[in-house]
Length: 269
Length: 269
View: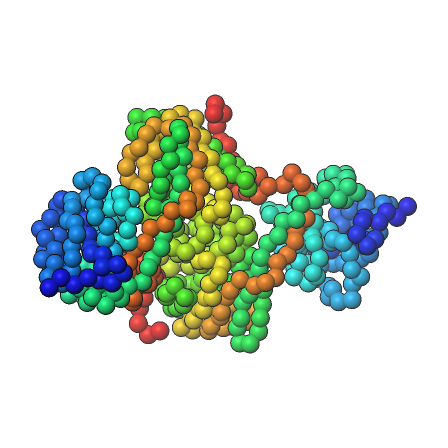
């Protein structure tokens, strides 16, 4: 029996990371009895001409979810098979729960906005971050940051410009704060800055930020090295992505579970 | 000759910190020839029944500006005689510049919003921060933070809840980020948290945050110890204050000048 899951009888897609093909096949086998699985694709393949679907189940880690979200304009349900899994609310051994939520469409939409990164006439979108980073054998770089509210200079190995979503990724590893996903701001976090300018700068999402570097540096968008650049412009884009979460999901539980921040330590409270 | 400075012929007030009475008198002598100085008051005195004024010149450090702002609903012009002076754009030896700007009313309004802090039926307002802090001889406290977006727990000596304005004050000293003044967010920064939860949490200004402590702790609002409390509620208030700045003022220059963050270090850029 094929069961259509509401809205225009559209089915489900499955995208997976190559290493997790076995797990992805288990997901497929679990769902195909009751749902119309309209595609099953390895996440590094081209996504052109895929049939539409109501949602894509992504089997893998955050990288696989990210890659899939940027290749297809559909809501995503992350099924964790990789490491941290901020973008995943289900584990590969919770497929009955997933099936139940799909059958009853018990999801909340977790919307996240993207940064628009402009460089050399290209436009790129970052869900987590845009990183400017020198090569290992390159001298420390002067970064000049310009916005409506003034200018800031950093003499550093690099700069991470991240969304609230990205605040728990690379920026966190460099000492940045944790931003709730619905904060209307983004942050700049310097990498190894001279001399003590290690703090992040939190900037309203309405700002347009231009960064100039004294030497060409690598531009890395959501983990992919994109180009050598001397200048980029960054602002909030109109694009957002949708993660489908179980109704009981909340951000704070996810942060507590994944990195332990804000988790209760002692009893007796 | 008394010169009225526009709008309804209202004059200027002067508020000063006791230690800077000499400097305040110099300000008074410099301005009284051309302006109607309607009051001259030591900042710890009661401000009841003072005549209205177009602005209050505050001679002192940030503490004096803060105290004055909270006692009188008027725009403030800070004249720095104390230490850091984030709230002051003039120094006591720049009085000719101040006079010129007053004569031509060359100011921009730097508006800052306040946090509303509710505890035990009282309402207090914080321009910089509300701090919950244990006594020195008290055991480490469990803080439970509740908001729409979930809950966070900290086992710590205290918590600092600060506005963007306060992000360059106590929260900065505890490792927090620098927030531009117009960010619509506030932050919670734990003091000496177990075990590694040292990062700040950046929260949308639309949130209502309730903090419960396992033991009564000191509530310190903008530096004043207010009460022993076990619970407070914090949200953005409708109140804002107005600092009058010279037209050429910008926040980034102030941050660079006062704490060196974002200042250009090397030449050759």
